[in-house]
Length: 428
Image 1 (cartoon, rainbow, N blue to C red):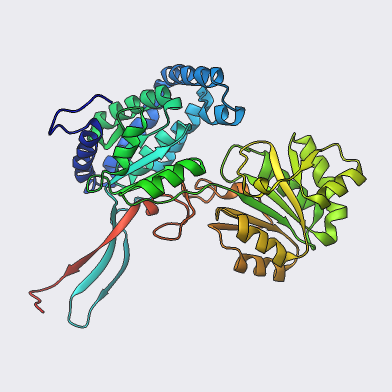
Image 2 (image 1 turned 45 degrees about the vertical axis):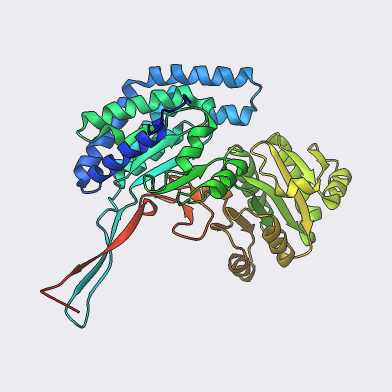
């Protein structure tokens, strides 16, 4: 970033100032105006798909040359089919209910004052995220629908993709009669621009980081702007003593291997000791068929050796229990009881999604009561923790904190509230 002359505002500050003005224009708009802009975005993405894919190819080529892992390249890659899916998601958001103006509660007080608590936009939302250009569109669509301006700070590895996408978004938004500055790419590719965004208190109302543990920790610890923490996904699947083994195998493989590069993929398998000898050989073979490497504790290693599984099983280290692999790897341990599984989860969980497979209702109830996570699954894959799967539409992220929002963040989570009080000459 070029040096500034004394008194000169930085490009990031200027962008945030424009976003604040745009947010003031967006806040009172009716649903029809916002939906028209979203539908214009959807059509523009389709008509400009070839340009978007071409820009993305530059990013993918640079990532490959840099030796980036296949999982990260998968997150980075846009194809014509993926652009079409993104466009369809935007159109779906247009069809969702508008949260702005919703009355959450209301009453007439004993003194005759009419009290209503209504949803209002947050204002200016900053998104700091890593190599997932689909987030650029998802975030913009959800922010526009909920009446917010958005400042997008993606990673430098996706800069060409994000620049192309934001150009399309801004043209479509402006063509629909909304301020183009409602959607902006944060200027600059250096860490300085991220730091400036994190310190833009008074211009930016909230920051939402999306990415790995290091990124999230940096934003949470270094920001003066309020942050909604979207955590990493060290998710567990616990197979209880009373589990249906066929069901357990299916849920395990889906949780781990259906798409391992995402935050709701399982990273650890816990198996009750009473079924370990029966379940683990089947589970290990199924994971082998899915090309998953197992990082096992001594009891898992012993079962693997005795059963002659075709799985790739290596000894787990202390680091494995806290690792979000985002790859075809999973840690595995045998536990003495449901409570032991809960204790393991409490020690290592990131608070994202935890799952139990069991036919026992008492076990399921105890697990859901004791486990502290944004989502707890009973006899279902961890992969269901998702705004789309929950029926919220495209999500802005999955919050693992406990204030303001927790779990998949859809449109209502991108609003705050205010109280509207109506009187008839009332004085206190």
